[in-house]
Image 1 (cartoon, rainbow, N blue to C red):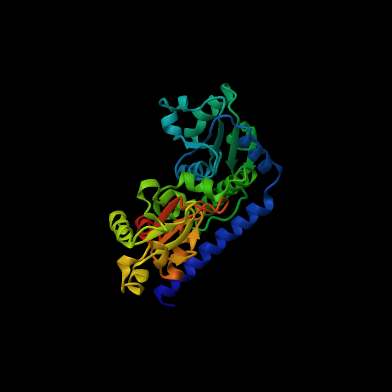
Image 2: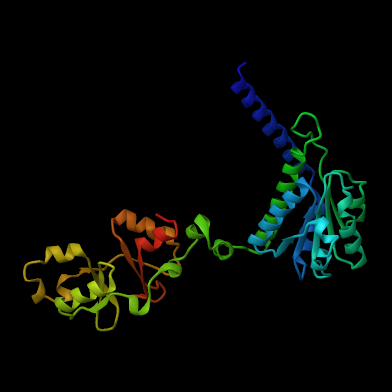
Length: 322
């Protein structure tokens, strides 16, 4: 067996070992998991997540996942807590403490502080008789699954199980709160994820920026409006202000003969495709790509009529869509 095959075999063994640990975790969960979710739901403050070493790295990720899915959360380093950061914990909080052994000495001050000030504590460890779980209000015991390192000393399967448990807690809380994609977007305004969850109303141009003329406007005035607003299009409205048409460069080319003697209503393409302000910007990009157009006027589907915005493909590209 060459070394590349050996590497692959090692990878498959590790993944299968950790998958077995996750299956044991799922099968072994009981009422204490539901109690932990209830405790977090009842917190008037935040969920404080803590752990040392590899458990600390996992704790940071769990705190970040909770915070981004509607449960206020914060990671507190247990060693820093012993040097002043204990003040970050309040009786309104819930403490989620992680330790594979349940005997990590650096956790002692946080455990003692939570007991002294009646701060509810959820403990996660692999030993039911550990100090951490015996002191916890809710004790979640991890199964004694085989570590994937082969030596039994490197935290691998145990940290994967703890991370998955944190995800399970976050999703259970999220589903109970009926946390929606638009809520998620509020916590993720930057990056590709934020762009994918952006609404049309977040990116559209409004009010004086809109290129609009009446259907009776002479084409000379219409050309000036197109030039002034810089989108290469103009929306055409009727006497009530309702968007009835659109003029693009294609419409101009089709009416070149005697163009300046015509009105906007003579040149426009009627019943243009529009989009609602609450549609995902990604859906708008799909429409523009499908129709091979660069702009969409925004009309409220609940009150069809005036154009309330304009979305240009460049606005979507600027935030990473397209």
